[in-house]
Structures are given as C-alpha cells and as structure tokens.
Amino acid sequence: MRIGFPRALYYFDYYPFWAGFFHCLDIEVVTSPPTHRQIMDQGLKKASDETCLPLKLLAGHIQAFKDVDWIFLPRIVSVEADTYTCPKFLGIPESMLPAIPPGMSVLTVNLNWRKGKRQVLKDLEVLGEQLGKSKADIRKAFSQGIEWQQNYQDSMGAEWNFEESIREINRARKNSTESDQVPTLVRLKDRVLAKLPARTSKYTPESRIVDQKTTERLRIGLVGHSYLTHESYANLNLLKRLREKATVELVQNVNQEEVKRHLSGLRKKLFWSHSKQIYGAGKKFVADQKVDGIIYLTCFGCGTDSMVQELVSHKAREQHKPYMVVTLDEHSGEAGLVTRLEAFLDMVERRRAHEGYVSTYGECLDRNSNTV
Image 1 (tube, rainbow, N blue to C red):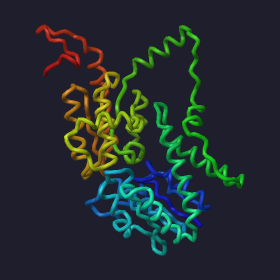
Image 2 (cartoon, helix red, strand yellow):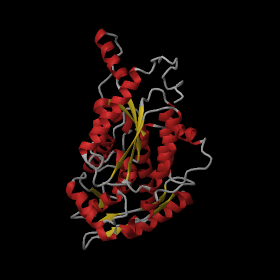
Image 3 (cartoon, rainbow, N blue to C red):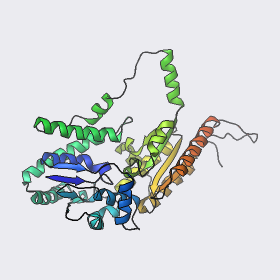
Image 4 (cartoon, rainbow, N blue to C red):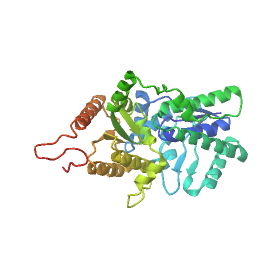
C-alpha cells in the first residue's frame, strides 16, 4: 500500500511522526517532489483565490501524485493542550477536494490533542480500520511515531538543518526496510552533528582568524512559519541567501522553555500553537543582544500573522532592534527580495559599526540609550 504525503504545510513540522507511524504499519509513504513552477501553477488553478500561498502550494503538491492508493490529508485540530492550529488547517480535507486527481481517494483522520492522548488513539484506531490494521498495531505505530517526532524535535539545536534531518528520517526508513528488522531511529542530533566539521580545541593563529570572522558575521533572527522559512521555492531561497551573509537564528532553534518564558508577559494567551512558537522566539530574538536584526517572513492573507507580526514588531521598536517584514505571495519577484535583503543587511552592518558613535548633541546612539 502506498500513501501520498504532500510536501507542504504539516510536512515541515509533523512528517517525522507520520513517517514513523506508517512505517511501523508496513505502509509506504510517498512524498511529492520539492516545489517547482509547475506545482505552483497547478495549485493556483485548483485552490480558491482567497486562500494563502501555503494552501495553494498544498493543492499543487496534491496534483503531483500519480501512483498512490491514498492521498493523506489529516485534520490537525490541535497539537497541544489549550491551543488550536491555524483555522485553515482544520478545513484541509474539504477545501482541498477540488485538487484531488480523478480516481484517487483521500485518507484523513482527526488529530486533536486538546481532548487528550486517549481520544487521539481512538481516532487513529478508526483510521486503522480503514487500513485493515488492528488496535494493537495502531498503538505500536503511535508509539513509534511519537519517538521519531521527539527525536526530530530534540535535534533542533544551533546546528540544526531541516533538509538534513528529513534525509536522516528517510534513510532510517530505508535501512530498516532493507534489513527487515524492527525499525529503530538513532537520535537525529547525534547523526546530524556527526556530519559537521569537528571544532579543534588547539589554539593556533589560523583558528583565531576563523573565530574572529565568525564573531564578525551578522546574526539575524528569521521568524515565521516553518512551511515558509523552509519552502525554498516559495521564499525565493531566502534562508540560503541569508546564510551566505549572516548567521541565522530560526524559530526552531528556540526551546520550549524559553518560548514559555517569553510568552508570560502577554495579557491574553495566544490560541494558535504556531503563533505561540513564533511570538516566543521573536521576543527572545528581540531581547538577545547577540541578534543584530530580525526578519519576519509571512504570506499575504495569513490571519494569525496579521496579529502576531504586529506584536513582534512592537517589541522590536521598543528595543530599537532592526526589523523587516517580507510578505510572500505567488507574484513575489526575486529581484525585489534580493534588493530589500541586501539593503536591510547593509543597514544592520552600518548600525553595528557605528553603534557607539557619540553625536555632537551628546547622545550615545546605541540600542540601550537611543530614545528616538
């Protein structure tokens, strides 16, 4: 049995769980190819004009499937207590029906952690009946999915790379299938970091020069939904361009304890799990003196970002932190993005170089004393 898993939206956050879940059930998961022009064009034709860019991309990825038995479109209501996912996540199975290729079936399931683990297991058992699996099989698969998801999240340190983490997951699936053994996933953090160049502890003049260059690089916080920051085609390779010129801090690099600490100042709790992570990470970047500037990546028509972006920008203005908003849609042009990005980085570089400048009026123009 082959299940199509679109490389969009929930793929960027929850693919490890579903990969482990279906792998344990001996079901092959087929992901759609990385986004390209044809996928975007197909999505624009099939999705409603009022939807956001990520949903249009999802429609295009659905169109890309050919030889699969099901296309998997879960209804992810909530992933933690007292929160919801984006409202458009809730209607994916129905809103994406026009994009389903003729003759293909949709496999869906409700996932609502607000109701607790027991209810989630019951809903997955209903899914298992459709797939011809027993309750015991589903419970075993659920445990493996949780394990894979936890290992994936534990790997999100400073050196974390999304594509490398996904390759490790797919490699683990392939290796366990070929060996015909019970699949085990080695901790992603250990496997990913093992591929990075080792840092020498011996002091040399050459290592001092390298350290100076590293500390001289700008440090930019990139804030936004994972399905935008890691969607290289839709964001016009923004993350790659940034990493060529600066050290980039991502929302995924901020652990949950720090996020919760920075959420404590809100008068009212945020309803949406993604927005909580984005705001908590954004506020952390604002307060971090090592972060030289913040870029908020959003898309046209995003309802949750319309509020959260204003909250983050307000905090950035309070601390006089350089801040830029990049709004994406299907009409975004590469030239305009590159121009804005270079201008922003030049401005941040100049600010850092002249931050301690004392003007003729006797005011120190650094981030702590500037009252403009």
